[in-house]
Image (tube, rainbow, N blue to C red; front, side, top):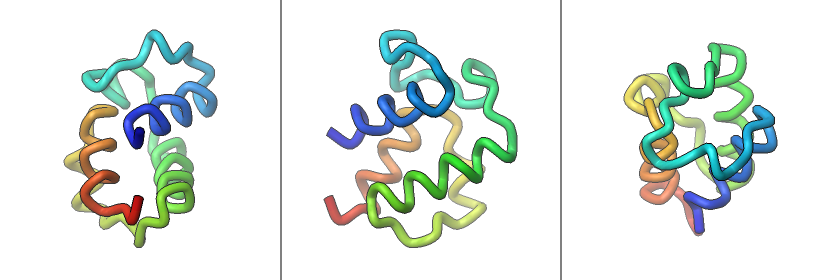
Length: 78
């Protein structure tokens, strides 16, 4: 469920068809997310999933949609 919500969020935010995204989709290399986009996406994730602020060192470890989903799954109340 969390994975699907993240895919839908990224699809809508970056205007990419959901079927073109998967857990191995790289946020920078495949989608082209820049630092401003990262901040926007993180705020959206924090709000959507009731997360505390995601530490910058954790953000650096998240390269793919699967990485985001794993982090959110481990840290959200859902």
